[in-house]
Image (cartoon, rainbow, N blue to C red):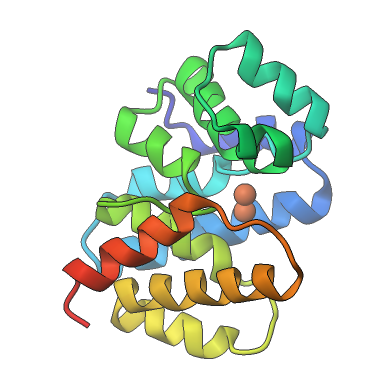
Length: 190
Ligand SMILES: [Fe+2]
Ligand SMILES: [Fe+2]
């Protein structure tokens, strides 16, 4: 596995816009902080934080092409939406280019929606992506504090607001978001 953050950082700067690059660095920092709090692997957390959005600036058609050419499994809804595919594509790139392990790649693949039965590393990436220092929205301070206290509660809260926002806008809801919420509601001590 390539773990040289400097090399990955250089690659990322070439692929992403300044704004998204800064978000990626912000997520890396938040991943490090949460990995410390929850005793997760700090190096792995930083690597996935930095690289999770490496495919985000492909066009929707480039994303659809990539999943087809690389035989990446995805639902009709995911293909229709397009943008959501960036997680699975980044996971595939990180496997092939940097040999990230399966847990890390899965964390990257599902970073937008989460999934059932996430490992702590996967939970850390999911929530770090939503609360990094470059983001600003109503309630983010509270959500950050909650993430430091109880990561499961923070994920539930974030998934719920995402679902509600999508409903409000008349948009589709991804099944994985619902599964993430149900799983945590049934299994975590909240
Ligand atoms: Fe993303
Ligand atoms: Fe992101």
